[in-house]
Amino acid sequence: MALDSTADYELYSRRSALKLQGRFAEAIPIQQQILESAQQTGHVVDVSNAWNMLSHLFQQNGQLAEAEEAARHALTTYANGIQPQVETLATYEMKLAMILAEQRRYKEAVHFGELALEHFSPFHDPEDDFLKARASDLEMMKRHCDRLNDAAT
Image 1 (spheres, one colour):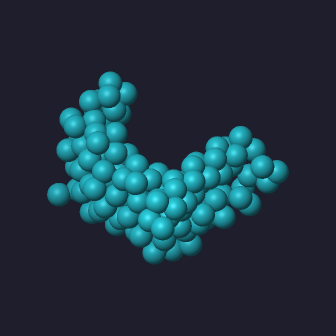
Image 2 (cartoon, one colour; image 1 turned 45 degrees about the vertical axis):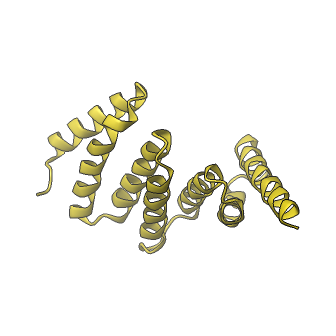
């Protein structure tokens, strides 16, 4: 059953308030309702954003496997949409990279981090603080990946 705009607004408000209070476990079921509502509309951007926020809430709650799954859904849903915006795609790629890095899956994290940086670059030329921070995140992932490779040899 699709939620009306008043109900949607109420859900967003409750979820946002809980998120700001750091009550992520309580915000997750509300975000799942928001996702269900978005899926009923079929609007790709809304569905992708709902998956992305769910990923963030799971990550903040320490549920990294669930966060990864939701981040992959956000990325896939958005990438398969009609004319995805490259900068938004990069945001989803970097989110997934950060979750993978948090799980110490650095090789996969580097892959998505490199894609994100490539997609972010045209929007941050000349290089600004945002792009420098993302490049720093990627370098951290690469260093961890190199350390794991060195330890394995």
